[in-house]
Image 1 (cartoon, rainbow, N blue to C red):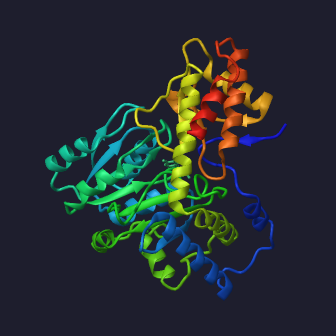
Image 2 (cartoon, protein in one colour):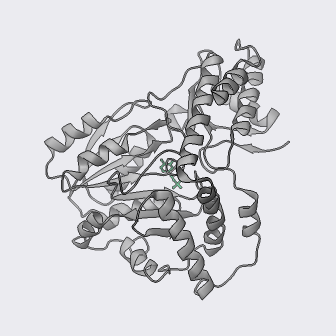
Image 3 (cartoon, rainbow, N blue to C red):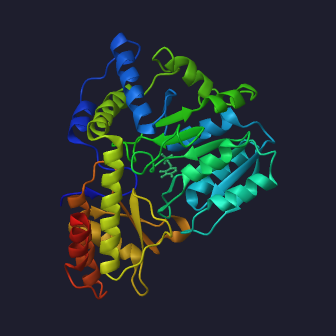
Length: 376
Ligand SMILES: *Cc1c(COP(=O)(O)O)cnc(C)c1O
């Protein structure tokens, strides 16, 4: 059986990156290591579309989210939290641990927080020091309009803190032009690396806000990472093997061009949505993003059983819904090192399994719709 990974993190890793991971371990304080970190940081700035240094933490994406809150928000400060799913809830839980006063703007799973909702919340809470948002809500497949959010928050004294994990590198996101003050991502989503690194960009406006906040974490204090990166270094021993490999995956993005990459993901996502509709299935998110397609499990079908069969019979590993969503949606990732023909295979396998469980679908209808959308 050939394993095929279609989960929205971790995602497949290119061959040259995997080979780099197999090389002998090197010392992290050497001139060569610093040059590699500097080069990777430059390429991250390109992917983030920012002129500010991007900080590298040895942590999963949540470590970057934790660092953003503990470094930038003092206890008791008011933060507007926009949540549309499980990852918005992760912001909420981190804010709670650090004693922030969260004003929650919440929409049901599958829905999207609109710019109008944020505008109302900002007007009602002029004392808010920050807004926390999610670019790609990976639990439901919605994408948020961060460009509009950025315009609204830029007019205030608040900073905009964004969970860009799974969105950044898959859908359009221009950190500086859109006024996104702190943006976090993880290596295992669209950046084509195994899990282990978190990346955080911080604007000048955010650094000014941070000055007045007392440190509350030793390891996850962004000030330490900023001081070190100015010397092309890290404050603690980094996962330098991963940094060397990340550099190679980022070269791929450089070679393709970030705008071409966004357009390619958008086209693949549109083709995938066309296949879903042709198979007689429905999408779950009202505003789907380009990194993953989230499909409603049709009535009478055991969603979790279908995913198990897909994996057991054809090697395709898609993700189930999380927590209360389990069995109700299928999440198919097409971010990072996944191309249209990989997704086409997943569509074909889903058709066969749907037939097997008795859902009426004519083999080839999804594949045909996908191909037509790619040809358009
Ligand atoms: C995957 C993901 C996370 C969690 O990241 P970890 O690396 O598991 O800590 C957070 N937010 C979003 C939007 C994600 O997709």
